[in-house]
Length: 356
Image (tube, rainbow, N blue to C red):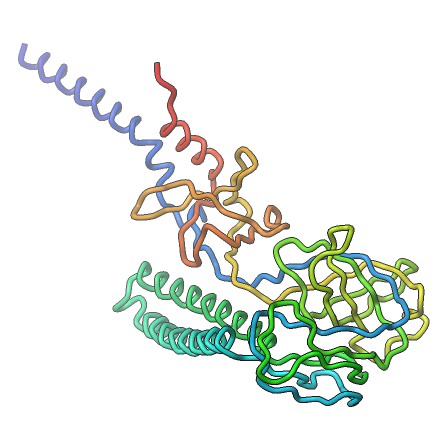
């Protein structure tokens, strides 16, 4: 009898253990498994937005340069009729509206550069002590901090460069000054006409754009693709019209960057497509397998404190094929790259289970 009871108890224990093992299998399958690349770290990258427009080479006309922001004129550096060259500073802006922003941007860039150096030193120290005195988690954390600090420096540098460009109104073509509408001490609103230039070139590229997210400024470079074929031509924005035209587009004037451009590809009446690139900005890169599309929104599964959670993210225009994210995720965060779609919908079902 005792023997039968022992066998019975052993049989029940076996069933119990088997049942426990079956209930824990899904959790084991969803656990972190770096060896099979299930979890990866989001990487900091540089993203350069582009816009495309249509342009036609036409006879050059006088161009008004305008204030990029509300500011005060601190110094007029040219005189009426003066010949000007590309990159020459024509006007300096400052005052109580612009000067503090420029100083803050400069300080932010300096602070970000110092912070990046300190974090890079810490990351190098962690690497030198791995694996004897530093574990893998600490090393990955140090590297993620370095990536995030580099991204912060890029953002700060871009902001400073933009404001500095606004403070120093430059010429981007050869020509001469036809009119000066401002004087030192004047307060200006954004878009105010400041200096009129008559281009030396006989022709310029007149373009129309419908920007999404950013507006080109003078000095931005790009490529002109003639409809008749041939190699693309490097061009640079020389002036931007204020506001929008009747077609709700933004008008720009451009000239060639390389003066050795073949004349047959730069003649009046030539038309084609123009592609411009904005300044580099910080973004985050993940494998495309990490992306989940649900109801026209993009998601990733992020691992935090040992748990998975769905996170809504914004992609760049080609992000579905590149895995580039501009909002919603930080460098160094851990994302699921295997079974992300299944885990997302399982998580959704658990949180939104309809009532019986």
